[in-house]
Image 1: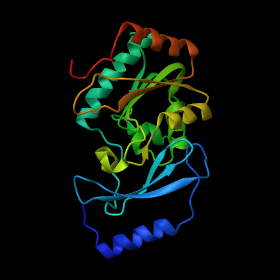
Image 2: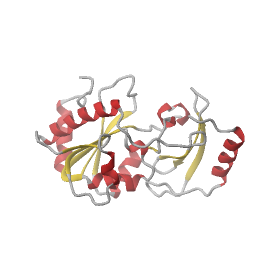
Image 3: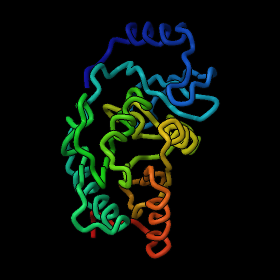
Length: 238
């Protein structure tokens, strides 16, 4: 990571604080607050904006990290997406379901003319890289069949101290969602959303959740039935 001269960093912070407070990108709430964070475990500094209404945390400007990492295949994400795919297939009960793993095919989100629709779309560690949540989610929902299911893996904000959330400082992060902000996303796009706990591990953290979207009430009922029978979703460790 390139180091930034302290004077330049200070100018960047002052410029952010002087800028007009923008509307929340998710709920359009007019009250957002700027926070300049310093990570407890390093000297990294980060400016974020939080929404007073839905709690969404926007990570628009990296004071000492000029380049955000694009969505790219990461070994851990690929393994997790295989387990998430099994969850989708088991929920739908379709052994030959059409499946798209976003980490393996990130170009699908950038396609202007989407023709294929998938029964199961899985996205591990993707939604926290979104820079324009409503638009970026719309691209994923376009990939989904009417009775399909979208399963995302992400760490959900519980309102705790942001400076203690190490993943917020990770490269490429653009969004940190609360349950309220994701319900807003679902409402805007006329889909249903649920939150489920994956198998806990020290690496995934206590706040990691599978966020499950579908247009179909029947599919959401099938999600509830699945977790009535199973405590956790399939694990990439099993």
